Length: 285
View 1 (spheres, rainbow, N blue to C red):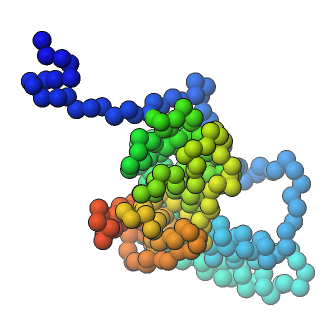
View 2: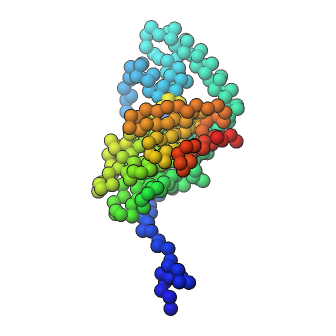
View 3: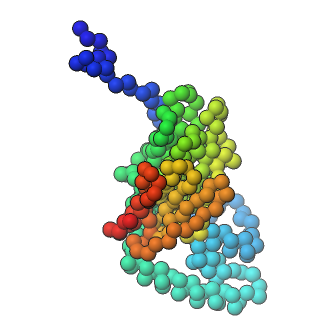
């Protein structure tokens, strides 16, 4: 009788030692949406106008900046409030015109991620994103509660990654030719985690994550590392430009194109010479 490792005289393929996925028994809960009428439990400290404007520009682009200026309560800024209000009205009119051509722009950030995420039921499923490491028996799993767990067949330690900006994860990507760098597409930014493969810690510090953000480039729904690992591409359904990141310097270059109403999915060719970019419409390049 032939041993089990042989079949018709041919050795059976060796099954790799894969990590085992284990999820918490208690049901996970997603972070609730903040209602417009909800008030924070603590007294909010009023920041200076320029800091508020800087934050509004970073989070919502030009319209956010104009809205902040139009609602400024500081004395002596009547002309600035009036001008910003008129400019905001024009900006909203242009945005509504653009939205009539691309209906997805009227969705909220969370609904947009649900529509263009690679997960079938992103809003309700326990696992929202999954990423195999290209070279080792390791994978990362993004869960409904916005935490990420990293499973490795060579270690019993399962790191749990949490960060205050790690909300509504849409995609993840391991850096090629590197064992410990994971890029995460979040609602407001891209997080790049630097994980020590020899560490026994189950809760890496948020200081291990770089924050990559750009005005008007959120939510981020797709990431793609160049095969060489030198550059990282990110895409958002609301931004017609793809961003090429130099992670070491936290700087980016825009790859602008016209048509499609945004970019929802990215993929490099194996030799790194071409990039496939899909849009919310029928356009892809």
